[in-house]
Image (cartoon, rainbow, N blue to C red; front, side):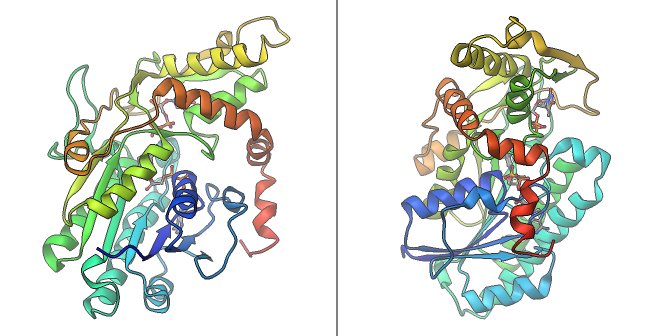
Length: 357
Ligand code: NAD
Ligand code: TYD
């Protein structure tokens, strides 16, 4: 097994992608990275500040649906590994505007698969070490009742336009393995949290609203359950799948941290009260919790059985929910400007100076 790789990371300016690029730069210095990102509203070059472009890292602003660009990158950069994060990722946006989800998540994945197939069929690059790792979600499995876990053999039952588009892309990835022998690997992961998450998602949204005395919207009865995983653990699982996984296999990744949404929101409020003292109102921040209309088709419970990746690849999460939430709140406290620039929209100035968007 060779150590050096040239990795096409798609969506490396997103939440998980940026944490992954940072992990590779810190711990896998001999892996070259080509970061292809369209810089949608969710992409932000500031997440990668401090990582300079050069022989080992290159940023390409572009769309994964652009077949000519993607094909050219495979050849010019001699890509042997793909870690495919780029996606439209927010369920609420998929309900109000599904078109971008179909385009990026399905057509974009298809475009990358075609480029990999055509490039690798010629046998020109890393041969037996070539790997197309598709990063997906547990949401493809649908919604659980109060018991049970998703395993790798659970039938797909996606219920939102987001999860349906991800399930479609997962099917395409598997089809390219069975039909063309493309060396694919698939991961289906539970909800991530940690630094650099766009503040439309539950945890950074609650942090930001509670810092500004705004109401904390909890959908429905707040009893929907998600299995939370600290983002660095997810990134390390992806490296384990690249290094030790098998082609054609799918690996579920989870945190073994099932929490009701209301508990997650309360934990953030209580950590902030402890670290900062009560706000001027004198009321604990949890008093800002407001139950709002439920999300359409809101999945009740997700829970991952991650025993396959533990038994076969020796991966398990290192960060407990309690420790991860402390680290996350500390990070957002230290990086309030980062959140503010997103909320007020000024973060786009950063790349508008460099690129036409
Ligand atoms: P994100 O929304 O934070 O980032 C997505 C990135 O993809 C952005 O940088 C965006 O600019 C880029 N992008 C979007 N469309 C593109 C296009 N057409 N071409 C090129 N780049 C494009 O998403 P995330 O939370 O980091 O999720 C990354 C991946 O992980 C997604 O595939 C998602 O389905 C999956 N996933 C996420 C979670 C989670 O909890 N966030 C859990 C499991 C799986
Ligand atoms: P989210 O972070 O959007 O992730 P996902 O929908 O992919 O699981 O939401 C996590 C949970 O929190 C989900 O059950 C919806 C709920 N939620 C709220 O209750 N209020 C909010 O403002 C948001 C954004 C989410």
